[in-house]
Amino acid sequence: MTTEELKDVLSWIKTTDLTEVALEKGPDGFSFSLPDAAPMIPQPDLSSRYAPVVSPGVGLFQWGEPGRAAALEEGAAVKEGQILGRVEQGPKASLPVKAPISGRLAKIFIEEGNPADYGRLLFFIEA
Image 1 (tube, rainbow, N blue to C red):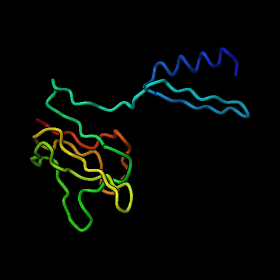
Image 2 (cartoon, rainbow, N blue to C red):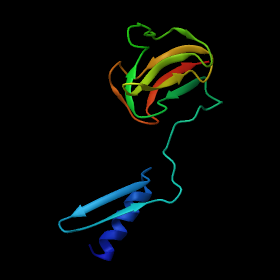
Image 3 (cartoon, helix red, strand yellow):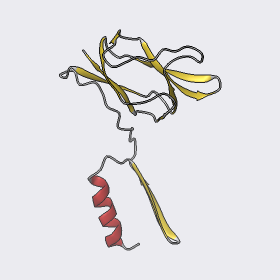
C-alpha cells in the first residue's frame, strides 16, 4: 500500500467507532488498533427514562435455567438486580443478565437461542 492509501484508511477510521482494523490486499496488509481502547458499550443515560441492558459476555442468550421457562414479556415489571436471562458460554458456564434499575421492560432486542456478543443491547428498561 502506498502512504496515500494508508492515509485514506486512517482518515476513514477516525470517522468510525472502530478500535481495531485489519486489511489484507493480496500479499500485503496491515493491522491497526488503538491503545487502551475499550469496547463501545452503551451506558445508562441518567437523564433518560430508559436504561439499556447489555450482554455481559459472549454466548447464546437463554431466558432461564434449562428446564425452567422464565421468559419475560415487554411491559413486565422488573426489579433492580433481577436476573432477566443468561448468556450460556458452555455446558457448565453461564453469565446472568441483571436489571440495572427497577422499572418496566420496555423493549426486547433478542430471542432465546440467539448469539449475544459482549456489550450487545438486549433490553431497554423504562424507569
